[in-house]
Amino acid sequence: MANDNGLYFLPLGGSGEIGMNLNLYGYGPEENRKWIMVDCGVTFGDLTTPGVDIIMPDPDFIEERAHDLLAIILTHAHEDHMGAVAHLWERFRCPIYATPFTAWLMVDRLKEKGLHKQAIVNVVPLDGHINLDPFDISFVTLTHSIPEPNGLAIRTPEGLILHTGDWKIDPEPQIGEATDINALTALAEEGVLAMVCDSTNVFTAGESGSEAGVRANLIELVGELKGRVAIASFASNVARMESAIVAAEANDRRVCLAGRSMHRMAAAAKAVGMLKNAKPFIDEDDAAQFPAEKILYLCTGSQGEPRAALSRVARGDHRSINLTTGDTVIFSSRVIPGNEAGIFELQNQLAERGVDIITERDRHVHVSGHPCRDELRQMYAWVKPRIAIPVHGERRHLVEHAEFAKSLQVPHALPGRNGDMIRITKDGAHVVDEVKSGRLYVDGNLLTEAENPAIRERRSMAFAGHITVAMVIDGQGALISGPDVRALGLPETRERSEEQWLDLIGETAESAFDRMKRRDRCDEAEVEEMVRRGVRRELSHLWGKKPQVDIMVLTA
Image (cartoon, one colour):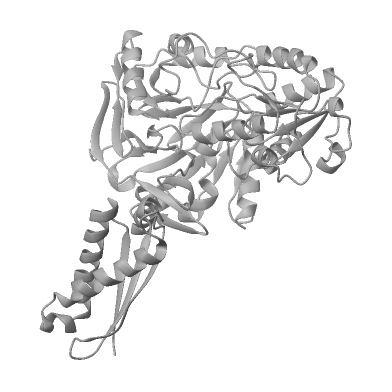
């Protein structure tokens, strides 16, 4: 890296994936470079990470330079942009800046960790400004699927960067102001060196659509329905929450919130002056006493999350809410890739209970919060950057976005990767170094590195079970007890019961021990390895799988 006053962009998360955003901007010579962090988010575990619910970027690079990290600046309050701050803040111990809605939720998260008295969250007004020398930062009002999404105009001695965060163009966002076009075109007149921009919907033609259309359709749809109605949506989409409330009240229904996230987001919205005209929400226990045609439930769980409110309703184990024949669930959300199995299982459970299901394929009940190609085209026309740096997307999204930007006459475009140290100059953007990047797992109450062998072991056990064989040998290498076998996950068939499996494994372990030379039988480590190989080999031959096998050898 050049030993001068260079401007650098370094993504540690969100470039090559959708979610888990962590972006760094640095300015100055290497030995005295100052940094700001834009967003610090999470993604969520899946079947490949058993026992892990939350995943976040590995911040090792900036943790080592925490004394030069001036602040964390949050563009908005989605978990993939702010969900890791409370987990990682003690590694940085720097100020946090956010607009009111995001700041309220950030403080709430810090309270859960007992950090709210230590971590300072500075509230920035909408269209506000902060100075963190050598960075001068203005907040630019955009629209998205959550209140108060902000682009950041980051001014440095090298030039002006626009970091868009997540955005779309919605002329009627229902909550909050529309995109500040005047601010964006003013940046263009000032001269935008680079735009670091959302790539989520780069493959989707046209426009994402307005919340106004969804609201009108929900009002009409709820009016057509009999029985109880439940609307499942992302709790963070407060405009959608308000649309559900408006649709309910327009059709003489009261609203009951179901799910912790719904209550949390509603509290945050009311704390900053939103949802002012909504009638008080009905408690779950009281809602059960309402006539079916007089209540509307607004539920978490649109993505099939097993512990969310709607999943508990579908399983029939929610303490207060019961949906059955004649009732309807409206999925006012999209299917996030990777969640298909959980969502379809949820919908099948609802159908089994006789509940009618309406999705975005049936009616216009959802719009995306990210820009499609026409919106990207418009943003580039407003901002006119010299350099395009796509983020917030898988590799294919970033490459396509870079090519699309070039087709719009942007002189330079660079689709980076997590860990790429990108030098930004008036001549373009170039990868000048590669730093450590990776993932951290929240495993219960612990934070572990993704390379932790425990996760690999759990995946193996989930695939093929676990075998434990205990043996006792004497000082001369003779077997005096065992093998004693315990097993989890062995398949019982007509041909072989669990007891027969255990007998076979014991015989295999003893046979492997007997084949060893007597001098090797006194070496516990050697016995463990040879017996483990023998058991795994035999199980692979008979079953076609190699389970986790642990051999415990004790010397009497």
